[in-house]
Length: 414
Image (tube, rainbow, N blue to C red; front, side):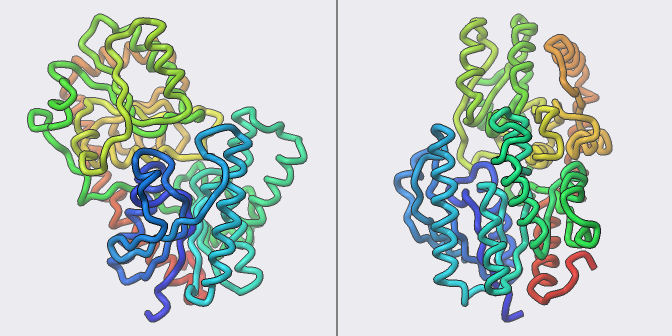
């Protein structure tokens, strides 16, 4: 197909392999292998040494990456983050205006939240269809965080903008059943056919189980003869991580290590709790190189996935799929009717503890520590489900078909 081209608009991309950056990079790489020509408009990295050294224009595995200039700082105050989001939106829109003739389609993510306005504007002005990947639903997240009042003018305008972006997308990709229910409520019935559910994934070529006895990550960090409960990823305000620190207090004298890998708004708070209670069984590490992802995830005996109840369906903890790829059982602080809660139950790959207390967590961990047979069964079931449903190959094939139909002007769900 001569018009297998699109521009991808997203905040994070290679080498910033965090949050949506990893997923968008992996998806773009695999779609390139399927014949798509992809240009990416993104921001400069915000974490690590890449923030200062990454070139503005880069070619990576057949993908053209263009980084736009922004103001503000996405790691600082609310005002600074808003300035960053608005300047990113402006810069991306201006660049697309200049290069719009090169692209028959646009793919846009909901990070930052107003980015879909660029897709809407170019769909209205130039008939450029856009596929919207819904990772987070705003303003509901901001309201539930207490940042906005549910009835404020800003909330009402933001909700109207979100619904505008949703209504005019040629294809709406949601990443969970709980999210699909919310998105359907925001659309008139005659537009529901534009919604496609494509779960997130892990790259089956990159993440595989690594036996504990040969795991370099465990050796590197001095992990021997302990049961490792690991949380890897962003420690954001939507993640109900505090109970795990309380559980660490309950298990302070037992051979259980609680390991946190990553960064985020809650990391300092969690570290303060650990210091306050003088806990020696909690370990904090920064983001790890992608090259050691398989070893890092496989180093855990049990991996924590969490999302506060208030954000069910507004976001989906997609780290679950990498955990399954590594053959690690999941401990889910999620609601039973959430996408991940349903998946854990359906696939028998872990334990769901909605709104747990420290005592409930400690009781569950004591039971699992002494029941290796159960852990092994969960591990095998999760890995099997991953290979059959949640690989990058499965997701890329679904996106390939949806994009091809969108570019051809066809119904995305047929």
